Image (cartoon, rainbow, N blue to C red; front, side, top):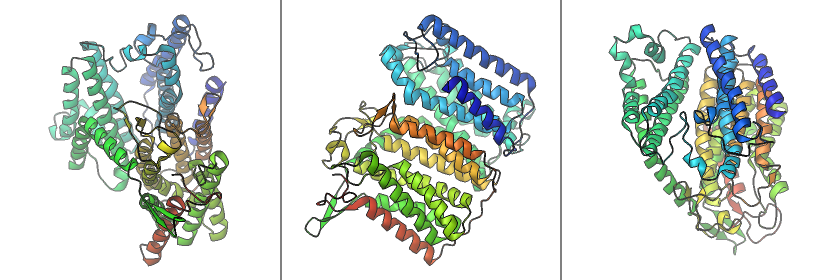
Length: 569
């Protein structure tokens, strides 16, 4: 019911509802769109048939296959039904010239499938197939590490897998911006303009990556090069999308575009080294807790107050700068903190967790705060809400460092290549989960990266003045729901409950996603005006917000057993 009726129905309604609000141009490609839809339908139907024939099950999580399928279309695609659904959505959007379908719904559908795979299905597949999953080697999937010599067809297919979506995404960005004749990707796809080599300098780093893929011979090495190529292409497209609204011109002859391609490619090439650095930094932070006791140990200041204070100051500063009402912003902060504390107290409060905090409680408290400041200060609901989410992303990213020190929101057990070890005796990893010295996933780090990327994306969309405030608010909930569904699947805290096969917060993430979809359909003002001023009251508000957050989340009364009196450790 969920996947066959509710989800398609929701997507159709969503497309119809926001096509009236989103007016970005769509190319007229009837033949191409028909071919894409045909391929999508074929992959979906062939995937269903092969799953039933070889797997002895249905393409439904309620009645999963009994055998791990590697035959038929699954020898080519690891997830043909999802791949087909995305192609079908893309083709239908082009056929009907749907702005929302092409630029919003299809990318979000793709992200939803990735989140479902990593947040749910991956566990079932591993349970069904065990280590044989590692040895699976579909043509359009990453190479198995067992492959001694990667085939030519595999290497060529990987080039298509990386660079066709890259080219298509770049071209659609050009088209949406109305620069389909002068944009970098438009010129790249126009053979008649290849004689102007200056316009093509920026793609040299990507050609270098393609050569690395072609000459790589082993399966393990090819997988590494493919991941490098995907990271470079994805980060390049991300910057190509978000930088222009911030005033950075990216054209085929600009040095800024060349710089973007060089930097993103270089960072992708050294991504393993970067990951090791982030691992080491995260482990050091996770074991860095220090306490200062006052009044014979009755009052305590924990060193992660630096991070919680910076998080509060960052969020307060952004929101206050946007809406221009300093006192209203402090009211919003108090509502969010109280909501986070009450939500977590109801769900997890016990003798060990006297003052826990919950992200979704902060969201609910923030909603009540937005309604309150609307009535008390006359600030429009959409203005207060969009300012809140633009500040929340960066506040959340900073606050996750506090989570590392405190040991909350930590991940499940993993291996050395992916995890960190915590042995600080006051960390919740040690005191509550009993995982001292064992490798655990760095889930707070995943959240930091997501919030930084989504924060700049939402800001860039807001600055374009092309969609309503409600659309941006809904998009935040959609992206957060998608990310949290995957992230929360890897949470390792003992107090996290599983309800009907999903972690309890995963259910909340699904609800947030649906609510976000509905919110995007609300017509409203297009507003990106900044009303705040960088004056003394502004900085006093920022300082006050940081101190309030630091006191709430990093200072407590360790000898008390009253509710809300003390943090763990």
